[in-house]
Length: 209
Image (tube, rainbow, N blue to C red; front, side, top):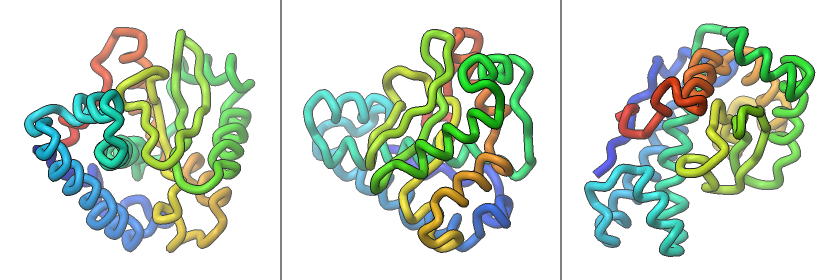
């Protein structure tokens, strides 16, 4: 059985970028339901006791769409909480060098990240990731995840409406811009980069529980 991980900061810690009301609803209702449903379905499929990453991979291989979507959403949300911090940060020098190579600088990365997230149709996620030593921005639909396959995720932002609608209404672009500028956890992104290079262990859901 997997457990709902606690937030790594108080509900109000990300204000004014994300309100405590949004965080309570998002974590305590949406994320909790994904975890609950994953546990129920995993038990039915004989996957009880497996790690969340193993459940995701097994569900995808078996074509168990409902289990995959719920398990992937449980993973994505836990990763998302970790991708945010109340303390505004700047990327490390190593990460900045890669950002410069791929996007021409932090402003270029922000433009690309916001564009991909804002243009994403319907629900999903926008990721900063690394593959073969190069940074990329990708999006996944609905419960799509990078939990168990390349590229290695460094940061993710939730672009489902429940992530921003109470605070920004339909203005997803404004949410993404504010998110990138104020709460992106660049220290965590640097850790994930080191993991992709074999210098650290990559984040796993179990570490959040």
